[in-house]
Image (cartoon, rainbow, N blue to C red; front, top):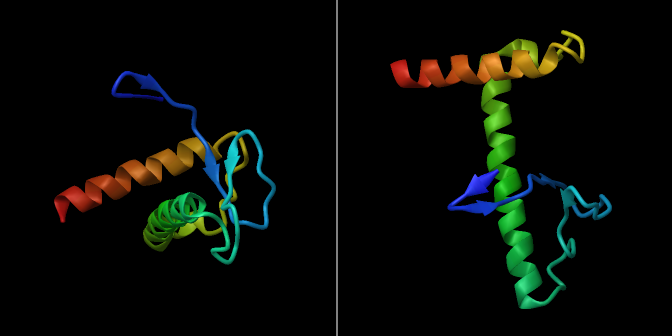
Length: 94
């Protein structure tokens, strides 16, 4: 992903109970016991995760088939993208 001319790697955001991996960002602590900079990072990560969870919740609420996605692993990405496109069209049309 390129943003303002800077190449950025995509990451997944996880809870503190997951291990830190090269592709998975996790909070420094579960109780705010880190440094001020670490606590700021943790808060931003939690806010970002919350936005994603709300978006997924909206999609699952509108497209019930996403709650139990039984289309096979090879068709899952296309199904999810199709639901996102249809969701955006519904949002635009009111």
